Length: 155
Image (cartoon, rainbow, N blue to C red; front, side):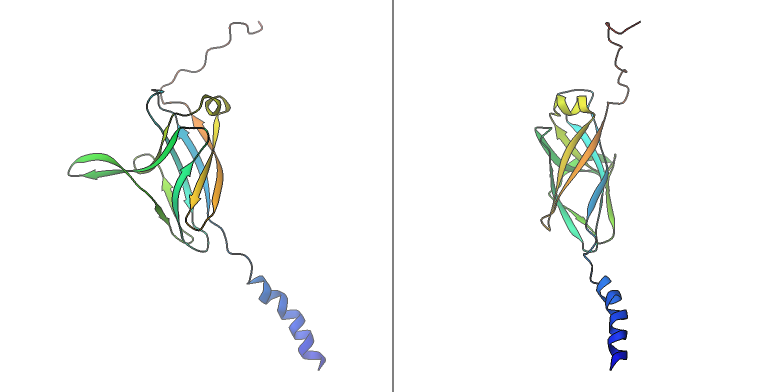
C-alpha cells in the first residue's frame, strides 16, 4: 500500500512541471531611426517573437509621438511603394522582423523629450489582449552631425 504512494510522490512534481504557464509572446531589438526632416515621419523597427501560441500584432502606440502606423514596403511591377497594414500574424515559437526594406513603423511627430532621453516607450497591442511595453532606442538620422560641445564647457 505504501509503494503506490511513494511512486505518486516521486512522479507528481514531474507531471505538474509540464503544466506550467505557456511561454508568452515578446518584442525585442526595438529602435527608431529619426527622420532628418522633423516634419517627415521617422521609422521604427523591432522583432516580435511568438510564444507557445500564435497571435497577431494589432497595433503600436506611444505617448512620445503623435501617431504610429504599421507599414510594409512592397515591390510591384518594378515600383516600390509602402502600404499600411492593420495586423501582422506572429506564429507560435516563430518571429517576425520589422526591418529596413520590409515591415516597419511610421512614427509621426516624435516628441523632443524622447529624443533627448534617447529612447521612447512603445506599447505593442496583441490580439490575445496582451499589451507589451518596450523601450525603443532612438538613433539619429544617418549623416547627422555630432552635437557640438557647449560653449561654457570647462577648459
